[in-house]
Amino acid sequence: MYEGASHLTFPFRRRNNEEVGSVLKPAGFGAAQGIISAAYLKDATDPEWKSDKDMKEWNAFMNKYAPDVDRSDAATVYGYAVARTMVQVLKQRSDAREHHETGCKSEEF
Image 1 (cartoon, rainbow, N blue to C red):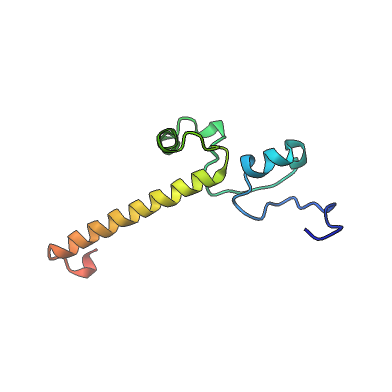
Image 2: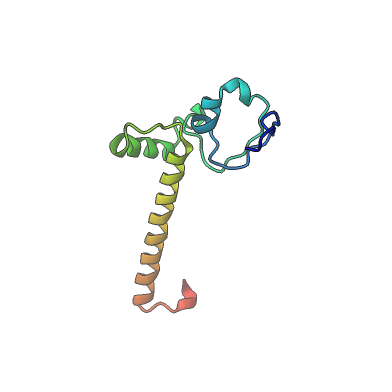
């Protein structure tokens, strides 16, 4: 931060990793009043997602492989989402390859 700029406030978050556990909680919730934010991932701390199928899978994964990790850190949800995306891409690639090897013309898939 530039010297003398600490008094400036910006009501918008600039990055998606500035979430409750990693930024707002350490800074103090009082300092976060009035912030406008957007996210493309589910917030693991939001009760809205308590019965969500994907969040239940994430919680089971965290219980098994990372029980001591801070679940309010958005990086945990992000990392899981990236891994799940890669698994899906590999499955689709495998399916496409099988489809191609069985004689399917390339324009059919």
